[in-house]
Image 1 (cartoon, helix red, strand yellow):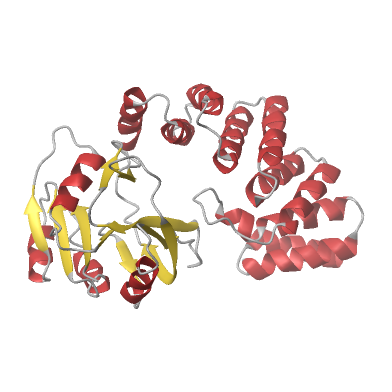
Image 2 (cartoon, helix red, strand yellow):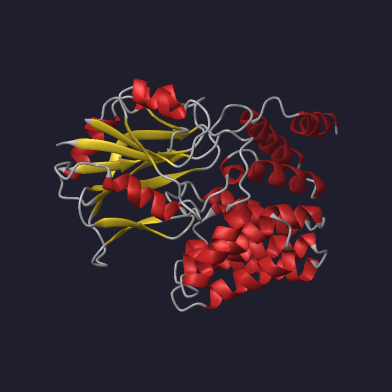
Length: 356
């Protein structure tokens, strides 16, 4: 197969060489620069990438990605879209080819969106930005998705062994995201995914009433059938009410979130943490145990790093301590500390339990 990588870029000089090195297994690398004022273009060209420049006014991610996809030669078989601050682990190309050989039109691979200060993986999910050369386009001004031109659901496969890491520059502004999300919802108000993302963005900016309104609207949409995302919207509504000091409303939404997707840890862990703060030890125990019964992490972007590290064990340890179960408290405090051995609060908790 002829496998090509394509990307958009703007002021990515610090990542250009690292990115090119990780993409070197491709047959061709194509980059659309959208207005760099640094050495990005020179570095990419020196590294063998085909680079074109184009300014978009106003800027939107789907237009830029579609223009970069158009740079890929027509005789390519497979296109892989990445960002310049991402890095493939070695051997990615062979695994992606193998997945496409099954007749797939798009391929999913493992993606680590961020890393914790400890160096451990944070937010992990499976991404499908690898697709056949023809019949696809990007849609939405931001949080853009790859779609088929004729609207059919593409045949997909999983490329086992592929790992893409997002090693982002945290100093970069995300200020453009909110106005682009608002535009996206205005353009397609019935799109449930856009509504969910917009509500989440309002929550990020602590615009709690707007977050509650938009996330509630998301839940009312006929297309909002995916329980994972519905549960996440309910969790975010609960967070907003908690931040507003409306604890009874927050509790109601945490319970709804846990019931909506009982196979996910995330809502159970947040409910356990909520009840812990309320000193409802039985409630904290119940939801922490429910969370720990779930052994498999979701492949979708609806997951939280805390739910898969020390948090459920910590909740359970504290709740059991207050319920008089010292042995259970110690066991779970030790498990929590094993995930984060430098966490001072967890170390102090264990010292208290051992000395009690």
